[in-house]
Image (tube, rainbow, N blue to C red):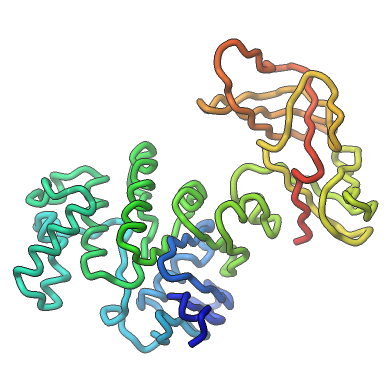
Length: 362
């Protein structure tokens, strides 16, 4: 086994799965490094949960191979795989205490009582629930139940922990707190986590690497920063974070490129490479656009009028109408009292550098 293969705990080779005539997973190839916190992100119906279930052994691929730690697990039943799964519903036994829930899988494996007690205490300590071990699920908050489910999943020390929308049942504030806790626990135990989610904030805020899925295909894999800053296609640019997308045609192949954008009635400057006449899109993140009252001297600039302002605490998003009626999104930090941000109806200029845009050809 080569060094690259040894570093990868999970390897998918041309994996496909159909349900009737629907192709749920389409020729997916993926490697997940040992010790990574990997997120599979995509909209409902994109195939991410089916992929998770195939790794767990609840579904079998129609073609391709799934290797975990170098072993093809196609014929290995779920209970014999070096994996464990934490379900979205948590699936705790309501008649058992938190400690008994954590101990359940260990008892099924025939572990000695003294070892079970020590393991359960260690797992409850890990999730900071040692004092609540005697409580039953209905006596715990949503966040506490989630942590019991995590402790139970980790107790058997799987090589791969599969998490199906792990924060979906929590309210917004608790989700934000639990994200940090999950990352802390994963780093402490060193187990490879594979999380499925449709929430881009969760994926970008927790994962060391992530993959974006669309219509059964894996369309981009990278770090959260790579995927956000350099999306590979229009779908990823639009799905991850806010974005302004401009359709156009390459009119000049210098450095930077000139992209003729008819909807704006002007030519945009963008860094990248494409042949003259190519149909492209330019993606510009809202925070990369400057907003000013006076005309700036940057490569790309547009006059506009502020139509909407959404205050979000640390920042505000401005919707600015430009030529042709197009609304562009601009995000600016709120710097506190004493400043005079533009108000509704204000005439403004939008500007960004050629390097701020991402050239997309797919």
